Image 1: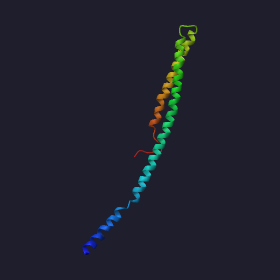
Image 2 (image 1 turned 180 degrees about the vertical axis):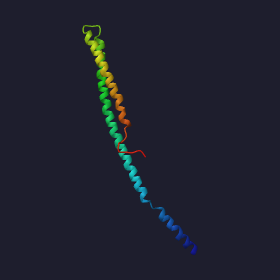
Image 3 (image 1 turned 120 degrees about the vertical axis):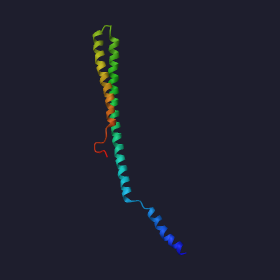
Image 4 (image 1 turned 90 degrees about the vertical axis):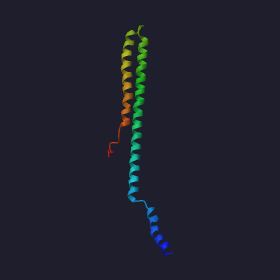
Length: 118
């Protein structure tokens, strides 16, 4: 009987202390969750900026290449000089739009300036 009581007195505290979670672990988990949430917010901001720049680039490139096509169709006809000007102007505008589209991807790799590497 004494051995049962003695073993229960020795084993029971193990179960009680095993259920405790150290406060430092909870605080570090909360801190990590807040950091992850801040990173997700920054990623969403970068995506919105990139999407806006990319769509602007698509519009400019489409207009530019459409003007180039219109200029090409005018070559060899009554307004040959206007066709040449439209070819060059549309080409430059199309290339500018393409550059704007590719430049939009730089926003995807940006990190939060307040976050420091560990």
